[in-house]
Length: 131
Image (cartoon, rainbow, N blue to C red; front, side, top):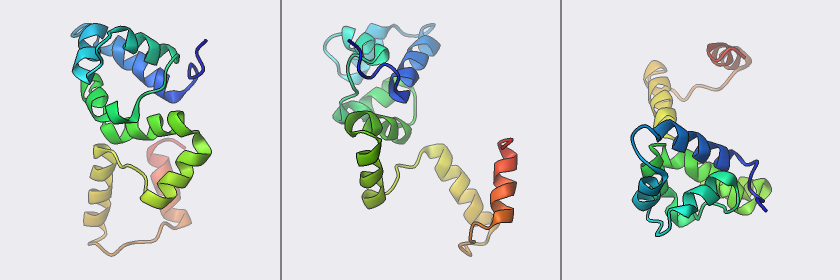
């Protein structure tokens, strides 16, 4: 039984284990993340277990992904999308290092004027991503 099999978290973990396989084993990733049993990585990537939130920083480092992105995914997995949304509404959305780069560039480009997101600027931003 794999209750978390179709979650974005399980997919990310499986993808990263595959992508890193030329450099490190699942056992090495598990050890770097602080899991005493290498099988935990199999359980996480197959969706048998959810990611323990207290392991997000070390797991993100072991998987070489941004910790804020993994926390967002793990939070959805841990408490469900509705509760995760409530938590992020109260505490704010974890922002990845890449997102911080975009934010800093927007601040610089706007001379820190706190520009509103207009229909035109939204369209221009979405066009960058082909949407």
